[in-house]
Image (cartoon, rainbow, N blue to C red; front, side, top):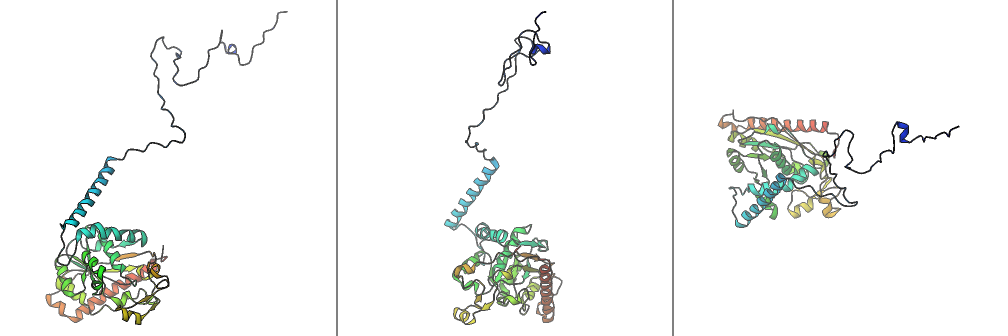
Length: 347
């Protein structure tokens, strides 16, 4: 009986191969010839990029040409601005308004406060004319006049024409050493009918807060309740210039310094209209002067035209009273509507 042959299960001969099976090669891009490929045929060899060494950081991507050009323009613009400041080669108008300084410096300082700290939401900016004079009338609150500055940023940054707002400020503003110069540079002027009319007739946006110190210094218990609007002088100015009146309502400023008391004796000694006492000031010292980060909404209402009245209408006390009451009621109504829509003081 012949000896039986034992064939291993994984032997190549079990798959019909004869002789010794082909050897298997490991690696990339070997030079072995494929089946049916003629001898000496050229083989395409793909190069595999080497892996980065362990722990080595990837090479930084090259900076985009547009980004580099943008930074170059900013640096060149900043240097040119400094050169003009040093040499005095810049213009101011008859009120001391420095447009370049306002755009380059003051707005850049106020913009983060409006966007990041108070998170101001602006509505109805399309009601502000794209050109020509207009009088923007707003409520006033907050113990310190930050609402006027935030309204200035809101108009400039949200209006399609990027218009500048010239505020009418109380005489106390122009008596303080540093504040006086900054207010003039930012385009603000004394709250008098002559200056307001000249600005309106020259095509400027003018902002006024008729409540004055009565509004900004009222106690926290009377928040969002409009005080008396004076004698209607702003209406008379708008009638003489023939410019529209744009009501403006600001919600959020009342809570930045909740005024729970007023040290009247200390205010008289210092020459201030009031000396506020809040939950943080003066108890925490300078830290108590930091405003609370409330959420703001600024809404501009539909303009009230004045160009249809005759020139002598500015001397009609009944007409001024009616227009003043109309503006005041529209601002108060919008304040109540915004307060109903507001879900939180801070969010």
